[in-house]
Image (cartoon, rainbow, N blue to C red):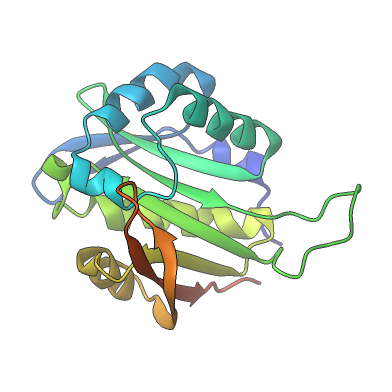
Length: 194
């Protein structure tokens, strides 16, 4: 029997050491973390922000994100080092709701990961992805998807290392913050669900 989301949340905080010896703490994202998340997102460089699907430096976007966390449509893990948020991973779902028929893709969750530049190459992205893999079955997710632009070669390599496989390239499906069209790459990974 799969654990419930409540069972999984009760295991936090989780302490881990990164490859470089830095201690981090993983914790579910809550309203108490709002201002720290905005501080983190505003510390990202323009190149990183260029490829994000939403402007996560906007307080309104972070508030909408927290509303999705509250409804259970999104589950986000934050990573803190030295008290500051230095990364996150999110699982975005489309759960079946009583008010409308079940969606065809309700078994698919989209994973989004962002790690501060100072913490790349430390193994944090893999640890954050592992946390989402642990939580996903409790939310009914059997397949994870990841989306990125063709330009984000580093992200594709990271997801390949995590067991994701190429699914498709959709030409011109992304318009970046500067108004340029870019191709979207979709990758996926099946989860071992009992």
